[in-house]
Length: 386
Image (cartoon, rainbow, N blue to C red; front, side):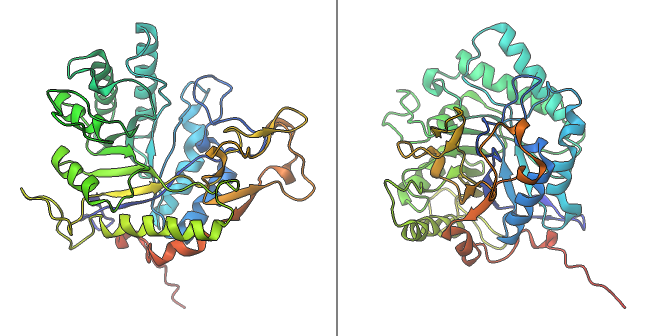
């Protein structure tokens, strides 16, 4: 549920994109040093991208890094957060996280630093209306099957507790975004359960999350056995923080056909997600026709050349590498503006600051599934009276 401008509540279904705005020739968004720049520190890019998301009725993003060690971090993120909120008109609600490489943390120093950074992020952003939730990491390694009292779950719960303690009176949600991991614990899973190891083990460990998030790429969201496994694993809301298809040319020469396949997945999420007026799987018996998801986020907004890219003559990632699918998951491709060279970010001229977005076919098809902005209470139409 989400609060509405009139003071009521309505069902909230996440639909949007995992978000990075790294440009051609630029490294990954980061949050580990004072020189790192994350995706919410680039207002010009945020403004363009959030406007583009609203055009297809998206309502949410997740980001992988949030730099609080940067001097003046609160001010550095303010403009992008404000662009996301958009004065409450079709806001893009944001799931924030700080990059965690692995759990448990390697040592006490790393643990203290991570908890301190999470505390600062929450303190700086919990009062912003665009911030919907905080995720305990994203894509971190480690073994959730280690046991409910293991260092893995001790550190996971420490991050969740830190988030909760630093919200003040703000009502934000706690989640996580993890890989699909099979449950193999003999006591918890007499039979192996694919994809949901974090959920099953996290429930047993008492992980304090408000909703679960698992990056599931197989099977498809409409799979009956996946939805039934989720039903058996948890009664908390469940989202797919990442899902989608690759547009890697060496594997998929017909990107239009691939977009059709991806749209099927998008429609499966819509069919199987909660919505206002639709009762879901809240009983004791699984109903294959009832909703099970609280939404999902497509991976990803645009291609990221820094992932396995082919380097240019200057050593920068100047072309998407054909030997890896990673640079080809974007719903938008990227292109340098005409006359602009692939150079380090600090060497870009103002005219070349932004790359051009080249929408793939899926972008023109999304509104056939996302037919209107939701929640409707935030789809405010301004009327000018003469």
